[in-house]
Image (cartoon, rainbow, N blue to C red; front, side, top):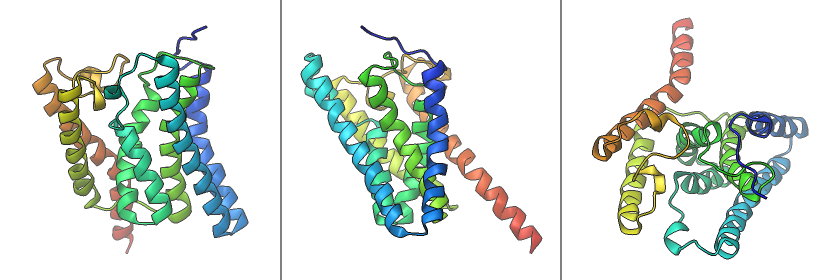
Length: 235
């Protein structure tokens, strides 16, 4: 029996709450334990969960769905890349990886959590898989911000925008070759989202996507810029 997804129903609101609450709870556990080992265990658990969830989704869709071609299984959604980036950021401890995870995770993946392009509701496997993959990225980003005090820097916007352009080129080529809508570059998602406000004419739509991404990056950096400005004025 299919359970249609209900935007901002009880299950969706619970997911949104957990996406915000879990990283704070996990960070509190790390602070109370005062142990890097506990932090590594949490990072390992989150990494394994993201990886196994991705693998399980591919197996479920490929072998139970039976109608999905290889063109629909390429790891070319932005959240696929975001998953890899946040795992590398957690294990490597390198700030450059974190900043990509921050802007892609909060700027892109958060949209998927708030306005999911999802037809299947609780307790369908695809409901859990979708939100584990997307919320897991956000949880990882916030966890790093709370435990390691990571934050974006002024040049982070330009660096991540450059990486986003690389993703755009790769995905655009893949969409043209496969006809599949990776990154929503062929057309808008079915579910209502910020992309719904963009043009229906594809060339203009693609240009507008760049400006929307840059705007999101600026907005996501703005709180840190304001804090820095206030601190400088106090000196």
